[in-house]
Image 1 (cartoon, rainbow, N blue to C red):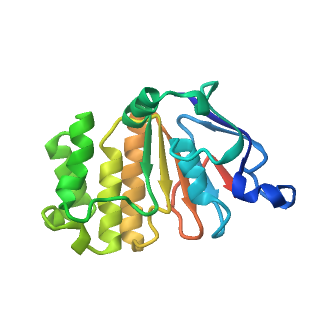
Image 2 (image 1 turned 180 degrees about the vertical axis):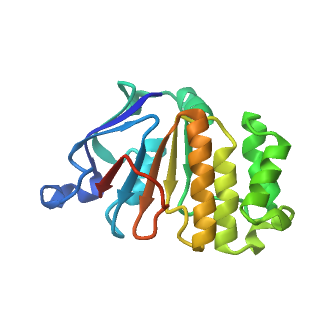
Length: 215
């Protein structure tokens, strides 16, 4: 996938006052390109997580159109979405969506077993680089939210992607771990020639952005 195009997209919840919205995204024409890095800046309640949900295809409560390489995503079949989420789109959810009853390692391997993308050595190295090598066998439900964010990030890297979406990826990380995460993200995205889309309501990844949109 080379391009994601939003045309006059507006969440249904904003329909009544859509004309009053001041946004670079909603009710605008926006193009996200593979290989480019974009920051979506927002304040709480402006639809930041909805934006990611629409691009990932698990919510459709919006007007307007979203196109993947010219194809309206509302017309895509379930089988097509499964393939896209396995090979073209990766998402780090704000709420993480990890399984608390499983270990950190098991959570990551659920994804990697589906894709076969990373070697065991590569995954071990990611745990080490992010400072949670000693937490691999810990139950996710017993880990801090910052530790869980790093587990979810590793999981998000365990697949090929044309675009990776990260919704508030460092809200609970210190500056050093945020820097390491940004470095790993850029390295992996450059390796795949992928686009990066980061959302933030304040603290955001310190990277070079090709474009910044105010939501």
